[in-house]
Length: 189
Image (cartoon, rainbow, N blue to C red; front, side, top):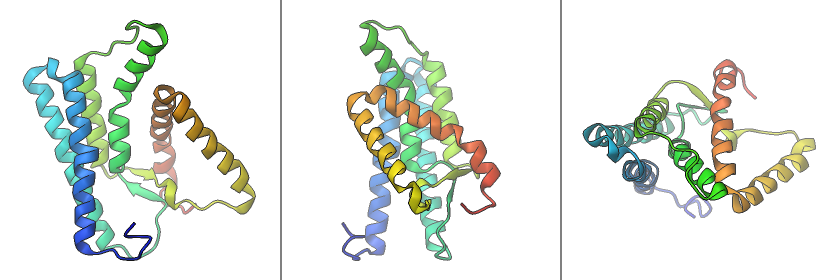
């Protein structure tokens, strides 16, 4: 709303980052801790805190780079963005829900150790210097407008109909773009 009204302020930007910290850092870490990571008592809690701390560092780094940016829109982020990190961290839980919903019993059971290792990897990717695609800043030629809108509509419908399939697939597709992002980060789209 602040962007639409052109009424942004420094206080609003910091408040937005605080909300992002809780929504994309604290909430996913606590969800994963209560779901699986609590099985490895102290270490599970340590990884949850590690995820929260890296999310705070990610948001702080983003705020600093936004303040120091030259105004040029970049096609790449440095590290995985906060919302993507939160979504990616929940993929093991979503896959468990998918297979439980489809078959009525637990067919895909991931260990607590695998969950905390995965959480640590995602946390490290958030604060890494690895380039990742910034989809919202990409520019497309006008002849691709209709197919892109159709794909976007299909994604929205599939998220409504089959969220436990769509969301993990989108996350895994995003992870698969990281090698391409590293390769193309010096070029402009």
